[in-house]
Length: 192
Length: 192
Image (cartoon, rainbow over all chains, first blue to last red):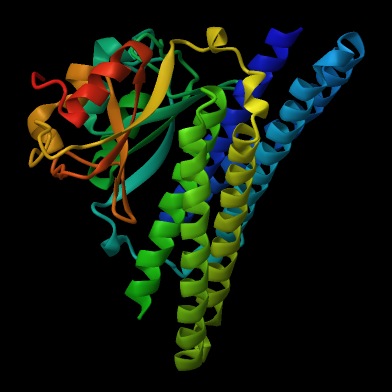
């Protein structure tokens, strides 16, 4: 029972952190696609919140002396929800087109960094490869920060994470590497 | 004028993101030192918020047609403040000792990761070195995620960032590397 709640809390934590990252990025780069991702994740947070609520009610009935733990879980969940809501309100600025008036000029940033989404096609050379084998980050400059696989997210994939056809890769890197990264993922480019 | 506001907005963004990271870490590892850092940063967020408010009022008087930009800045600032407040409420759980009832067992995590703070002493071998020269991360396994220098923070130091005596390094890495990292920073260990 507890380990199921723990797994959900970890997902809650990872999702809210990722939403903040994406939300700020969507505003900095005025990227509506990434802003939409934040709104999608807000829905996932709601589901998770409801599931956690249900699970802790059951847990509390079973183990009434664990009330301290339960209160911490509720606080954590509420804080994560606040973080997610704040991220969504940043994404909302972008989606309503207000981000067209850039609040932070790119010039002030150290380098021209972008964030890109690309879907891995069946004939991409990435299919079946592990990140540790291909060194996509050091070769292309684009670092995959998350993978969307169906409705699941894999945050911070590691060298053992295998790429599958249909995966949506979300990557950050220099603007000039974005096209190459998209071509590699979509199968247009076969040379890594 | 605007570039001053932009610099403050970037600091606001970086600080709130870092607070979320530290807050969750403080709860996961039940680390009160890191939780206190979050509360300290909340104070910095308040200062920044006040400074930004003052600057945009001046900016708005000077350029009344820039109201869209001003409204985006206000939204962004409020969202960042919400994120910071949520992070502080997570840290508060740790500081009130509620984190002693771990809500997330370390066992569920991929590896035993920790977050550590260490002050660089005058006789540490790190003094005067750039991160690119010493490869502290790949050698020790501990990656410095931020440096506190006086009341300033450097988030995500890069290979050109030079370490100075008195710097407080905040690093993340495997538990078994924590002592070595602290010894290197404090000068007890001279071999990197």
